[in-house]
Image 1 (cartoon, helix red, strand yellow):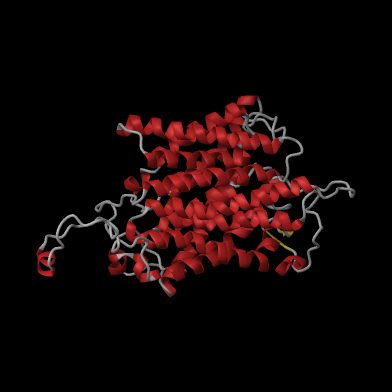
Image 2 (cartoon, rainbow, N blue to C red):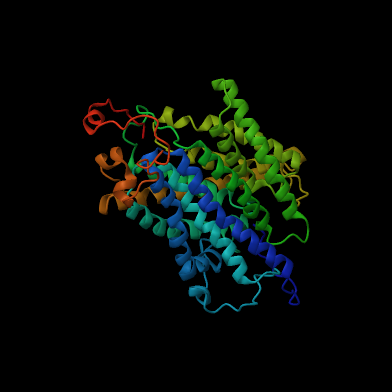
Length: 448
C-alpha cells in the first residue's frame, strides 16, 4: 500500500487516477464472489451453498461496519500505534466529495471504497478452513467481531500513519500481513477451537466441481490485478505497472512450481493443483511485488508454489482440519512473500530498500519478521478467543446429524443442484417402469 504522505497544498484531483482506482475497487469487489466460487467448488455437494454464503455475507456485514466505524479505526488519527480514530469519519457524513486522500490525487471516498473491498475479502478467506461445520449465524457474528477487534486494528498497524509496523518500516505492498497472514492465522485459531469435521481423514471429501474451482481461481487472478496494482493509489511513477507485471509473473511461476512438485510427489498434474498454485503465487507476491524485480517475482512465485504445495499436507501430519487449505496457502504464502522481501528487494521499486541478495544485509528481513510474527500471533490468539466465546455461548458448530446430512438444507433450506428434473427433456426410448418395479430397483449411493 502506498504510504500516507503529505504533498504540496496545490495537489489536484486526477481524473485518470480516480477512474483507475474506481476500476481497481470493482476488481477487488469481484474477488469475494470469485473466492466463493473457488471455495464452493472445493466442498462436497451438500455444503456448496453454505460455502458460497460464507463469503457472500461478508459483503453485507463488513460494508456496513466500515461505514459506521471501520474506516475511522483503520485510517484515522493514530492512538498509541495500535488503532486510529477520526470522529468526522464515523458514518462518512463529514467527508467532502472532492476532499483528497492524504497528499494523493484521488478523493477520500475513492480510497475508502478501495480499502473497503480489502476488508470485505479478508474474513471471507477464513471461511474456507471452516467448511461443512459452522452455524451461519455464528459465522456472521464472528465476522462482525473479528473485523472490529482484529482486521481494523491490524490494517492500521500496517498501512495507517503511526501504526507500529508502518513506522518500523515493514513492507507490505498490498496485504501479505494485513490480509493473508491475518486471515490464515485466524483460520488456524478457529479450527483449533471448533475441531475437525466428522469423518476427517476417514471419509472421502473430494471437490464436487473442479470446473467451478478453476472458474473461481481465474476470476481471483483477474481481480488480483486491481488488488495489487491499485494499492499504489495511482501509476504516475510506474510502480503500479511494476506490481501488475510482477503479479502475472509470480503467479505463472507458482503454477509451474506447484505442478512440478505434484508430478514428482504424486505422479500427475491436477487442475486443483494448478488453481491452488495460482492462488499461492498471488498471495506471495502481494506484499513483495512493489519491491522486487520481475526476476525476483519468478523466484518468489516458484518458492511459494513448491512450499505451499508441501504445506497443505501438514494438516494430516498435525491433525488440524483446515478444510480448504487456508493455512497452507494463505498463511504460509503470506509468510513467504513477506519474508522474501528481505532477500529479493531490489531497491528500484517502491523504495530504495535492498534485500540481502542486493547488498542490503538482513536489516529489512528482521523488520519483516517483526511484522509477520506480530500479526500472526495477535490474529491467532484473538481469533481463537472469539471462537471459544461464541462456541460457549451460542455454539459455533452445527450438530453432527446436520453435518452428515448436509449443512445447506439445514442452514439455508436450499440445495445447490436440483437433480429431480435431470434429463426431463430427453426423449424416452424405453417403457416407463411401474412404481413397484422402480421401488424394487437397487439404489445407487451418491457421494455427497
